[in-house]
Length: 190
Image 1 (cartoon, rainbow, N blue to C red):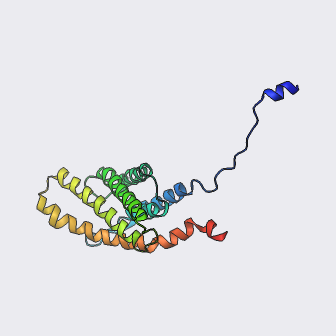
Image 2: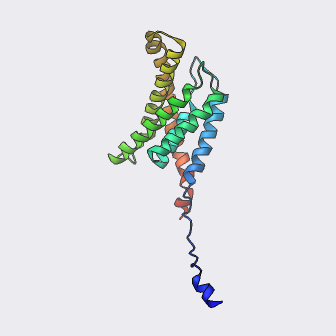
Image 3: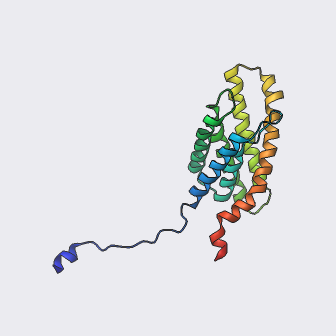
């Protein structure tokens, strides 16, 4: 019997990292909230905030994910927007949200590397630029699919994207601090 116990490998117990996947839960929760708000928000004068972009901008600012994770966030955001899209070409959301999340991630990484980690306007700027990239690409895809002239895209569609960009930047900025407090609630209590 003792020889059999010697041959068995020792079991090693490893403590899991506490909250190692909290970013996944926060991402899922905020994307779900963004999709719901995107679905129920009324269109006022041709403008509706894109809550999903604002939510993934908050997540990316909070978690500073790897680029591959940001691509995943953008893909999931785009995929979930397809059924709730109010546009003529909902599949454009896949490309546009991947682009928006990727640019947001690159900007966050660049700002952190440049020492702007605690800059209060970081969520505002990244939310605005992510919306401009996502909305610009989405409307350009829509222009191509619908065969619209370039002047319609430049003078009609891009100004709407800019207005939505400002709205999303404000949403990202205003919600960042409360979500950050929720995200780091256990660390603050220690």
